[in-house]
Picture 1 (cartoon, helix red, strand yellow):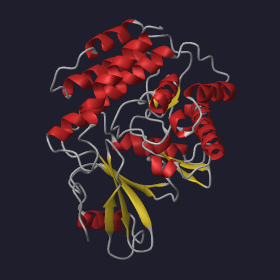
Picture 2 (cartoon, helix red, strand yellow; picture 1 turned 90 degrees about the vertical axis):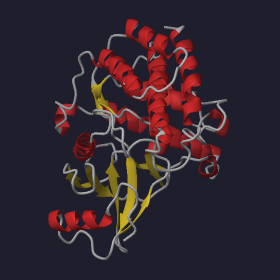
Picture 3 (tube, helix red, strand yellow; picture 1 turned 120 degrees about the vertical axis):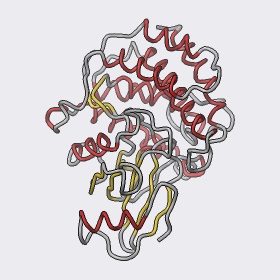
Picture 4 (cartoon, one colour; picture 1 turned 180 degrees about the vertical axis):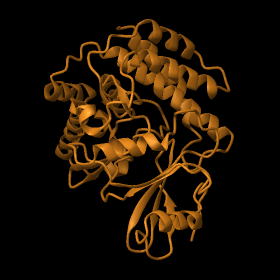
Length: 339
């Protein structure tokens, strides 16, 4: 068995055999999934079947930011809905097994489009079709009645946006190790201009193309639900728009690669129009949500930079993350000029 940082395969195998006898057969082997920037994801196989194991990052786990139980719960609840998700197998909250809580889910075959080399394989027509399907799944998620899938108590929609601004400001303070021009101003201005939420929905929290698995031009599974909650669905939409075009012109960007108009995909405006057409939503006030998305991403990347400088992050591509924070803050401030 080839243990990896954060994953003791012997302990994992013993736990699986005890909790789900017969699920795995031969000796386990594993590899870490590159591309994630927060929770650690591993492919674990026994020679016949492959499963996915998710656990928090090594060290410096911010409170509520890496809750395996919540991620497992929303995946389980959405099974059988219009939103495709992997089948969950097991949740383990006992940190003594592998050193942290974790859960196991089925591996869904397909492609995760997270590099220009991968998206280059798509025709322009396929890029447009895939983009529209990505938006359609997001609209479908927001259309689900949380009560109908057992998620009525999954969050507190009242005061959601105010709490989000406070939460990410606190996350920033917890990971702060350097001066960041403008980020306090952005936080304060967001707090002072919070819009009224029109309705509550299940919010993914990090929705983008490289957080879905694509198989034969369909969205086969939506991944990375660690930030999911009940709240304002426009936060997902503003974040998707920023992922789509907010990193344009930022050199050596390891976060969003291969998507956006410069790669032959539709514009963010076209994505928003598609969402509005499918959901009937009025998106005239989306600039605040875009500004909040820039702030949220800046805080997340600063947290990753913090862990990277302390050698608490596994994987490649983290050495440039810290340089992305300042441009995101500047764009967030610019977006607020229109609010």
